[in-house]
Length: 295
Image 1 (cartoon, rainbow, N blue to C red):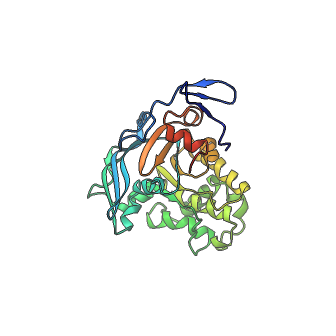
Image 2: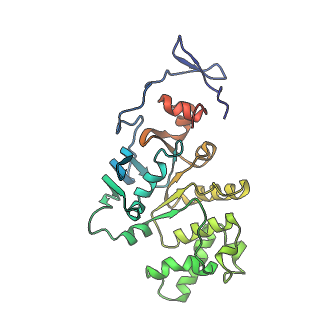
Image 3: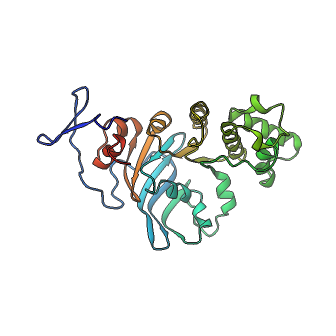
């Protein structure tokens, strides 16, 4: 992005756009205090409601007092420089950080009004409700069919082979992969191209009827054509699921999301509707990042 897209008149304190349109002066010039995010962190009827979330890796304070809601039937894009805490926060939402011995998570993370850290919470069931698609496609060393059937089988979602076939067909169809693989379901999942493998992983995720899909840079290893297919798929899937995506591509965030959250050094700096974040950010750090001044 052009680093000179926004010029600052120091005397007037007004941002001058290329069109000569004047926007409001920055409302805040310095990093916000932890937990003091610019913008409205709430949404009506959220699927996730997070408040004062802190994450520590040993002595390192990786996430600081983050509070945000995640809406149903929307895509939330999390952007920010490398190492700012985006993926760490994403992993909090289905307790993937539990797998890291040095990690400690504090604060409130509510899924449909229930604390995901409650002692009664079955983590396996949580991860079925909140599925994750990783940066690098990771199909199981099984056939295409068995990759998708694995989750429904272990969760008892299919009473017989006919029901399992229907789940596999429906999941591959929704992931936009059925027509490409219907004649080779017994082939290894690893035999597919990178973009197809990623769609297979998405089919595997939605086969267990999740409520939320988490995506950690799902297109970073893909070519532009495969990336476009995944982005189109996200638009379709959000009609049924809440989606939270971590991305380093601001163009992708602008294309696929309805809300955007900007992270910086473990703080959630600003959150708001995607159009507003990219056209009229309210915090200087946000504007500096999206105009390419750093990051």
